[in-house]
Image (cartoon, rainbow, N blue to C red; front, side, top):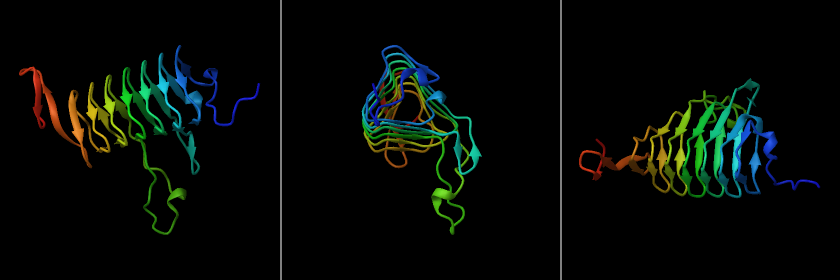
Length: 188
């Protein structure tokens, strides 16, 4: 039987592909041998796991790791030439973007697509975190455990564990205060 052109690669093509995991078509997956998917992962239709070993003649050693019980919403894009780790029990809404690099633009005479990528910086989405609709997580960012990223937020710096961030650039608007046993306004 022939695979449909929009079907993701079969489980055996990945570095790891856990039991009960699904990548729903249509999906685009580059370099599946560089991707580890845990158990019980659900990746909704339209995802692009944009993992590349080469760009404009430069070689990379990418590693995308998606933990157990992760659910990525429709049209999620993950761009990885270095290291992106999504820990267990992460939930995302639709149209999120996570990237460990971006296109350079130093040469104003050259098309951006032909310029080198910015050096990748690791991204980690901590256990139990949530990314709202259209959230963007940029290179070098860590989202702490049970961090909550609001819809449309652009995360340019680390998000503390058990904090809520919103806006562009994202800022902490609520955090869990262990001593008070309650959510409080602002950062610590």
